[in-house]
Length: 313
Image (cartoon, rainbow, N blue to C red; front, side, top):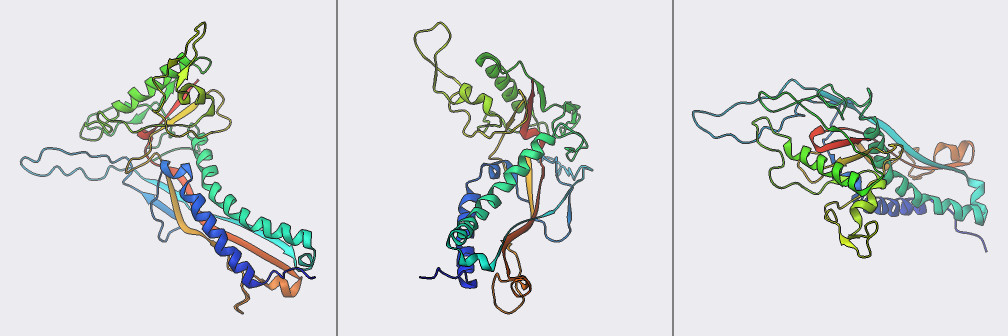
């Protein structure tokens, strides 16, 4: 008995299933909680002049206080990305190869959904280098960000840590970061977070045991004690190659520490010859080749440095 032929109709059905899986996986990706999603409507490069503006409220007395936009400009260039499967039509007659081809198609959804997270990790790691400059002209993680508060000087989101070798060191640095967050202010001098601070996200897995265990068995102790930091962190993202450094970020705000700029959403690549043959490209006629792929145009960049802190050990 012959095997099922991989027809354009089957490919289209695979495409529907692929994007159903993609939507499910994309909506649950942790990177979404750390990003703003500004639209990119036309130009290859978008310019943001509103970044840095956290004006706050002032009492309305003689008239409105017109704050305007500070002269900040941040540009982010869209990049094109693609993922393509290519195979020979003759391979479709081999049952083993045919099944391998069908199995690879849903993998495009996973690869595509995970790609923005890879970009975010690259952006985070670059935040202490010259390639990671944000809207104010400083490295995203810097000790000398110009303070948006009227009459302010500078603020730092690059803190010196005490190490990661003991629970006490992690707790001390975690507390220092929370204190720093609670000290960041808007242009009118009001606190960004006020008394309530959203749950932060740790971005380094060496911290896991310290903050995700409900109890600790302290050294030379026969009983476990409650961990006061348990439950304050609701997600953990691993950032490779940070050594003993780690990053704390604040999600759940109207603005975010990073931005995902999307010009063209992930979609099937247009490989048709205008003949209604779906995914069959001109290669089918010329070489017997068949292609199946997706592409998109987007990029990951920097938002507000007040919402992320790097602990430098």
